[in-house]
Image (cartoon, rainbow, N blue to C red; front, top):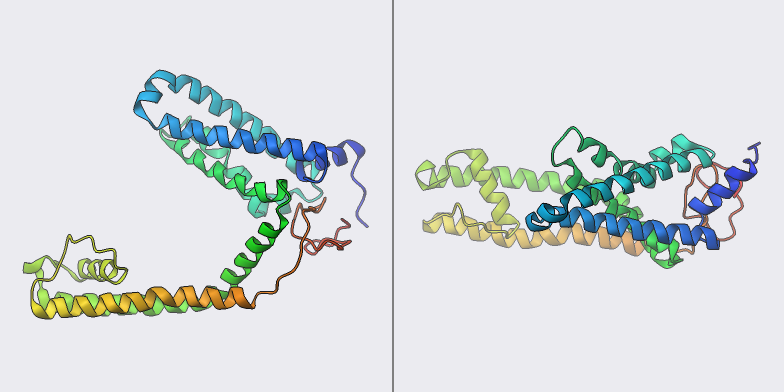
Length: 270
């Protein structure tokens, strides 16, 4: 049997994790505003003119926000029943990554730019504003991508084989005198051409080379459509169901059915 959390810890959990209560919603909205201001500060600091005039203020603000986020992260670990499970979850990892760059900047110059990772925390806006339909769509998309992973990996393996063969062919046809100095360089050209990026730094000039380039360009259009079709089929086949914004007090997992009494991930009572 899972022990009931102490009153203070339960209240803290309600404020930090739940978005259905006034206090929880106010906390989450304040958190989202702080995240937005923090990301804006990081972006502004990268502008030379702003950095020269307001750099020290922006850095002080970033440290204040980081300290607040550190306290918040520790409180999340304290008030949840299974802290390690939360720490290993998607949001737990994101919460940790949002505070690490500032501390790294004390030893590694430029590491503070990685603080834009905090933008990932804005994904909570769907739960905070009770946009559960968006949460359901996100879960459905994630399930479709997971189901498509093996097919896409096999597909990418086939594409890699094709570009290696085409790279070797163009190297054999054109040679070093036309800019194809090696097979790896030719493979790079094949990838750029197949994906229709077309940097133009290397280009075949002879009719045979242009014919091969045209063939790989046309093949590229068909290849681009394949992974899209795979994911689309999985999305169409994914089951649609309603979910709630409740989180588990033990593992902080979300996405439970509205009538669920127990967590589907750890079995704790909701």
